[in-house]
Image (cartoon, helix red, strand yellow):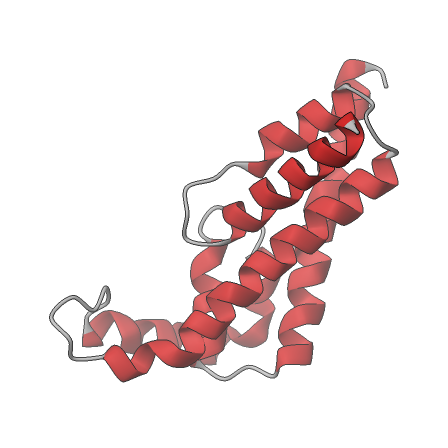
Length: 146
């Protein structure tokens, strides 16, 4: 039962960390791995799925955000939005390979604004997020001698 609750907590932390909420999934990931509550491959899968699904929330937010453009509370100026569009147009979908980074959430929102195909979005974000968790698992195993 502890392993199921730990994996659910990891999923929630990974999901939240991929959204605009201030979460850190790495701490939970390392804790679950260090406690050996589940096989490492399962920990990586649970964290990756949660993190990718959190990024999908950002993508959907991006798809619908422009209808609020011009509102007083809109979080981005027209200039900032056009700058993000220009940056995305120049570098394209490949920026999604940086979606694992702390600033990567912005790329996932812009991908929605730019109407990136969902399958392309999912493929690139999955590669980035899963790769990050694999590296984290390897580093944790190396440091802790697991």
